Image 1 (cartoon, rainbow, N blue to C red):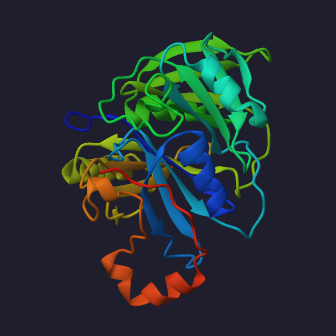
Image 2: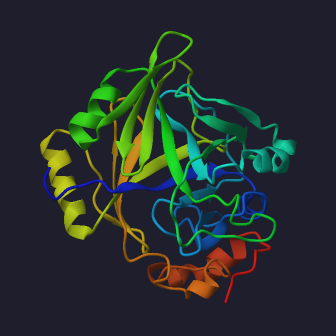
Length: 313
């Protein structure tokens, strides 16, 4: 696997309901920057919204595909069930007070880390963990200043009932086991290093249902197009079905499923989110890819209006 290093977590993508409620929560309550407002070409009346740091750096990104219709999802086997964000040391008390209306639970997770767990307005499970993560592009806005601002995605939790999920991650992805912690039920929670982040594999028997308030996939970072092609070849030769390379404008991506059913992608760091907007204008208007410009009137007619947070100079 020489020359095929996985650099960390690139982004996570989830499904949400009302887009305005989503923007208000992630940009105002959590203080993330809305770095890109674009469309879901497969559902013309749906947005695809990205949040992250000041420039949308890989490793800080959480995105949402809005689905006003359809079922409310349920966390369970065969999906990523939650995501953890890193926040500065000493900031959990600030966040517990700020998130009071979302019933935050401050506790120690199975690995002994002090954290806060809560659900977003659609029921998506989130964690905040105090961990020093250097980020010169951290976004500070309004009432969430640098002493408390979210710095990066710390890790993701994969729910699985099959032990082959734990074999796939080190054997097929080349990730190393950091630690294992025993749960109250007696099962082991395994943590794998992904750059300076992690993937936890959580044994569960809960049935899942894809829908609003659940994760669609988690994406891991690779350096460039050549590395992505090498991974496509490597996974295919090892018997893992892989999608074709998909151009997402801001990165290129391939998809595959681990044995438990969770959808994983590998994504390139470039070209990044400033390829079609200036840094000062990120997230301030609707970006429709050039390939979809012929459908601009359709998108603008079907998409609900949004009140967006302001950008910076």
